[in-house]
Length: 190
Image (cartoon, rainbow, N blue to C red; front, side, top):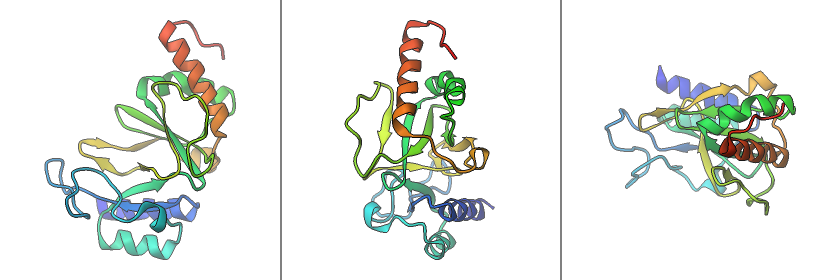
């Protein structure tokens, strides 16, 4: 069942133009990483920049061969802002109020807030300390990928927002405001 779940998720995401690459995988949390020799963690099994695709035939072929992790190749059309779960929960209502609500994948520790890509490399803007901007040349796991003992799940599915992505800079500004507020424990104006 898990294998078909990964294949179905990859096919749906690629069908909505999310560029994907297959990633290493584990059979159980204490087993070695499979799919690429000498892997010690979750990584793409192919060259990220050359192999990322939205081609449904290619995606179907990859995920029919193995239960690969589903990885988004950032920087083409979609970037991801990775934040601690506590900051994600703090920012959730404000992002919705500012009409910046987009898809969000989560684990118990982190949230991935998906935004329109700002280009192949990270834009030259200030990024708040707890935010990691994944852009050109990087990847992030997508549900239902499991990284060790941490499953990724959709907090806000792409369908929930009609596959729309918010702009990166206003989303980052909102996260910055929430981070500043969280540090000082003052209420967030919504």
